[in-house]
Image 1 (spheres, rainbow, N blue to C red):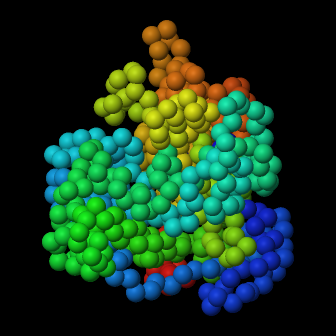
Image 2 (cartoon, rainbow, N blue to C red; image 1 turned 180 degrees about the vertical axis):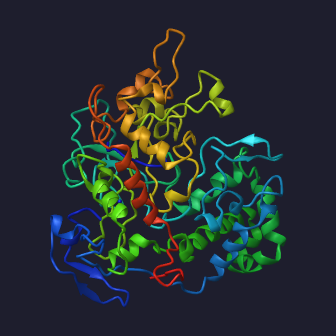
Image 3 (cartoon, helix red, strand yellow; image 1 turned 60 degrees about the horizontal axis):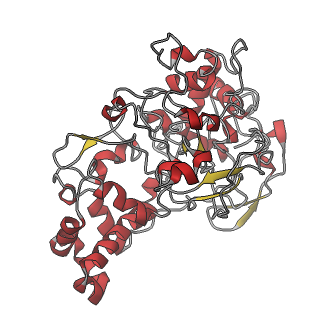
Amino acid sequence: MRSFRLLQSTFLVTGCAVLLALGLSGQVAKAEPATGAACNPAADGSNPCPRSLRLEKQQPLSMMATVGKAMFFDPALSGSGKLSCASCHVPSLHYGPSGNAPVFKGGATGDREGRRAIPSLTYLERQPPFSIGPDDAVADDIAPTIAVPTTGGAHAAKSAVNTASSATNLVPQGGLFLDGRADTLHQQASGPMFDPDEMAATPEKVSARLQTVDYAKPLRDLAGVRGKASSDFLLSEGLFALARYQIEDQNFHPYSSKFDAWLQGKARFSPVEREGYLLFNDPKKGNCAACHVDTVRSDGLPPLFTDHQYEALAAPRNFALQHTHDPAYYDLGVCDQKPGGRTDLALYCGMFATPTLRNAATRHSFFHNGVFHSLEDVLDFYVLRDLDPERFYPKGPDGKVQTYNDIPAAYRGNVDTTDAPFDRKPGQAPALTRAERQAIIAFLQTLTDGWAGETGQANRL
């Protein structure tokens, strides 16, 4: 378990020590070896250890992906005939939601409240499948699946400058959605489409449209004899087409932020951005990079600002949502991904996925229940949760603050109280001052794609 997971919920200062990176041409390029403070931003904000990043160039979409793109924008695939995938995942907003509502309203008549805040669809192309295994913050390959321990054990803290220190921890990791219940974009596509609270379609309706709509003719041709004979097979091919669109279209993973330019030595941080970067990586201050890993991989792949793992941060219950008025209702993340999970996965109840921090500064709804609406609120919660709990949690009839009020008492031991900045106790000074929190937010703003650069034109780097 690690701290500082936004939206739930990463270049470490040692990241320049990697010797090899793949350049844009595919040839191996050497980076000058350097470690520690030598790779911190220079006083003028420049990068003393520029890297060659492995960045994919946009290729023409395959026929399958072209069909998927048409499906993504087609409201007729929904139960109401009014909602498309793009209604919730707005391309101009980095495939995230518009507005600041905590959840989206959908359903057949548009009046049903979604269960969770809408995540971005960007930067999912390297997501590993769900597993429970050793804590490896820099891995985004297939993780090993092992038996779930039945009892807790000693928890090694995670540090932004020593991500190997907690490798003995067994943690949930990988998977799509906030609870990891899907392993592939193909599987993920069917979730919102057939959810009665979201697009509220039926397999029959989607299959019928794919059998007649003009844009799906290539899909029907690709599906061949089996596609003509089986509506289920054609539907599966349609969901695969949606997945191909998200993988092939570089707009879903452009790596075009100011930070990406800085990594390559093409941009300079402002003084406040530089300060925020250093705080982000300081294990005694923000400690953010312990979970939101900002390391360039040895193969040159840019950082995703997530370790693909899960954390119980005890976000306050959001009483603006209808279902939270039922005192028996709890959304417990990982352990609710399957029947019986509250027993079989009890050690992980209350944990939700750590999405990427890329484009986080453009969002207006944070954590799984959308309870916060600004990065300022999120940073305040991280730093002051246990120091000033009455600021975030309500008081009960007895006048006592109901801390961790959206997690049943039986699972509150899962909440991260170990890793900075969550390791502070009442009476201690917060890990970050208000000015330092604002500096981190300034750094987070460098993670927004479409940076215009010095020329005022958007960079594709």
